[in-house]
Image (cartoon, rainbow, N blue to C red; front, side, top):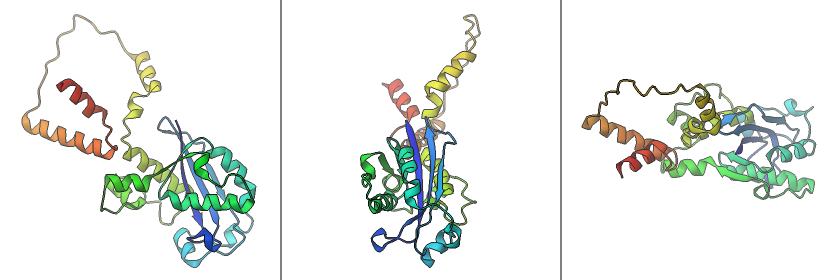
Length: 238
């Protein structure tokens, strides 16, 4: 599956008030691996940036004076995102701005959900951790992900960090059992000697088993109900 982690920076909070996108950053993930095929553009919004927004991302009007306008990058962005699963933190914000930009152009691409699948990690986090803070910084702390470079918001950096968060939120186990990894492992496997000594089986005590079950329950909750080890344990017990 081709997945794109996307973030934008804008001149303000509301496109209906004339605010525009000034930065788009996208990171590509295929089979739960970062490919390096990223998309990143600064954009001249043809209007001033609100002081409040500038305090968040640190991008000034002067920084964007020589950058392309949205129309210049619109087709490249559409082609990059089309058909992918696009993962965004607080998706309605970014999707609203992207739809607005295409509408201003008179483009037919005014409904992003019609040309790619959108996943909102904020909604995912709220289901996993109801009643808790679920900002990107809070999730980084919860999953022990380094975000020390994030002194200011930046679309590409935030997409890279969100990519790490998303993989942590969804378990990260699939990559262990991907077709590519299994094929690589099979190439290096040695045949088993039928005359080898039998391995001694050491069974866990009650406390070790309890801690193991608690860990599986935590992984299953963090991975939206998917945990291969828990499924294997259930199958064996049946």
